[in-house]
Amino acid sequence: MLATILLVSIILLLFILDTFVCIPKGTKVFTKAHLMDGDKVGYITKALKLDYTKIKKGQIWRLFSQVFLHVGIPHLVFNCLAILFAGYALESTIGWEKTIFGFFFSAFFSGFVMAFGLKFEDGEGASTGIYGLIAMFIMTAITEHTLFFSNLHWFFIVLLGIYTIVGMLIDNINRWEHSSGFVGGILYSLLLFVFNN
Image (tube, rainbow, N blue to C red; front, side):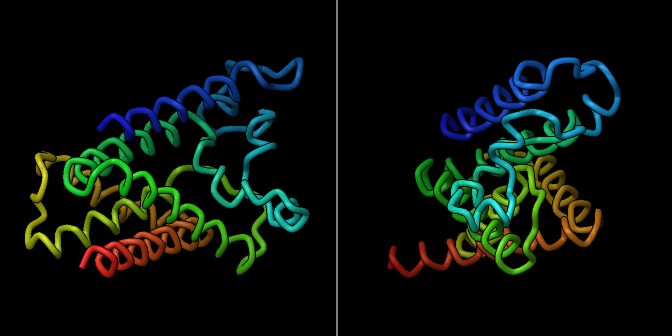
């Protein structure tokens, strides 16, 4: 669980810096647009978001660095909770290394699809990695023959299910991001299965 907590802590720290510190002078911090909707003026967002044009120019880190960015408090809260729930279940079963690597593999896979498949210029959020974790959760449940393969309470499994469904209903871009992260998680799980047997 420590790796998942560390990941969430980094995301929270970067959100605080990007929302309150690393912003253009004169930014109105305590407005609805800034706090709830994420007006994307932070310098960290500008340096790390998924941006096809900048990736083409060599800024490869943008294929996965978008997972550290969140645009608004609701976006941040939902994603951090989903990381904690899915990460806890997976870390306790497959270990922290495989869990964290699977998260970043899924985010990278989604970033690659979004950048080179759709030429996307504006991507932020950990949901690409989270959908990978959810796919890994499902794949682990299949191999363990139960959804309750970890100590994660059934209520949190239901919340992960709701998160998964709602995230696919937002809009077409989110569907692409989330489904490609999910596919990344399936591919990663299959690689684990092949190399562990």
